[in-house]
Image 1 (cartoon, rainbow over the protein chains, first blue to last red):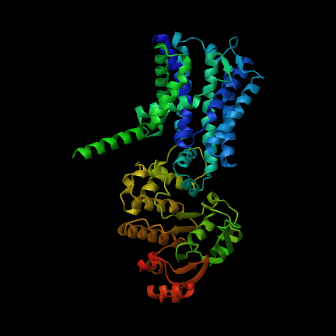
Image 2 (image 1 turned 30 degrees about the horizontal axis):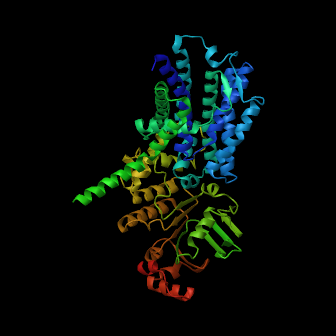
Length: 297
Length: 268
């Protein structure tokens, strides 16, 4: 792998680290498999593209986060107020977003920003080729710090408790529907930002850019957990980012080993399936060994 | 004295209109004075836990009124009532978040008192308060405040839940067989802690138990339930004269059926 390819992998990895971070909030903390993410990623891309073309790339990042909050809010209302199952609620919002993303970009499926200033062209090249990497890393570090601090506030603690023991949250006189909503909005805001950064990085807002994002995010999250464990929030957050970078490096290595780009989703799916089922498979194998040992005696 | 809890002709039927229709509370009326400690006995399925559910708001009652300290709470949601009502269940795992530390759990319970979402972490003052309260349990938990609650035993978790439910003094404490899942020694310990906390804070309290001895020795009033009704309500002189065999005899007469509940028989 060339240095340029490695740097690119780390840059994209950092951006997708935000998706893994969002899944840390929704999947790991709230214990909700939120499939809105695929739609929200593209929504972030579409929103930021519209703003960037209008000459406001930085505003576009915040707008993408706002759009993400709205998407998360819709999913949250569907499951808390209207009692739609959580996975289905995410699928419904994601499906609606396919159309909405195209509407946002003015009835087109992609919106190029090649001729416009983006976050990355606005900032002068203070560190040569590494400028872009440093800018992305700074944004991601900021989001991580905010996330860790949020989980230390009373509201953040309540969000964590909601995924851990919902009954106990209502027993503490906190509405679990409210904490679920806060968690989903926060997670989708982060995903929206990831989509926006990705779009500005690629210089195009693409309505299909979100497809498969959930699986990539999950794979990254799990790689991070395998490496750093799940003991604390700080480890979880850092693990998500590190996992995403490693995932991207694996993908880059796969690409340079001439696995075709269209097969990458298959590779991602296999990584996730193996990583999630690993404890169950190990248990089966151990049991098999124990039985064998017992027979020999 | 002022009434702390008033249940006025409360009715509840589950699955009305279907083959599974079950009337669980029939015109149930009950009044608790401030500082009352009421023990509740009765066979399985007689409506004891349903009574607690009606009070703590797990469902809305079909008819009737629920009043807490003069405030009509009939249509308040469970989490809104939880501000003033603490509750413990038989299952010691139900009241705590296993993946969070002891102090984080306590901090959540303490939120009933502290409003305002923008504070970071747990203040030194709060931590000191938690440490003092934990020390009262005499289980050594005050030195393990950063341990995850999932690592504690059932008895330790139930004691912690009790502490959490009373950390901000509730107007009413509901104990639903909260020692039934613990071994006898631990159960006694948790019961003693319960007594201590209730007495020290002058709490108004209702406790469901299958131990008739406990039912008579604890608190100042005992009620017996059957088929969603209160069939016996004794306090004062009448209660101090009561013995376990007499109470069992009464159970026979009032409910007009043989005692088919092993747990009550064995609890003598």
